[in-house]
Image (cartoon, rainbow, N blue to C red; front, side):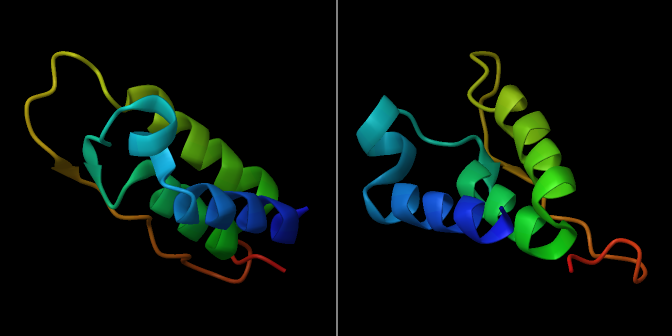
Amino acid sequence: MQRLLLWLIRSYRTSGGGRRWFGIDCNFEPSCSAYTYTAIARFGARRGAAMGWQRITRCNRHDSFCKCIEPVPEADNKRDKAC
């Protein structure tokens, strides 16, 4: 499942991402797709996808005027790392 999700995100990003598909720019740095990709790679499919979804739901709010810098947290111990 993890490899499938990473492939889907890679395909989305190489085909133009949010600007091409939705006509929007991400309000975050790294972009939501880059954040989700890293979170899935670092924490596994379930937790990484949940982290990405939380990030995506906060993106492109009309009251946001600048890019927010919010990197993926580091995995603290073996329990957090993807298999």
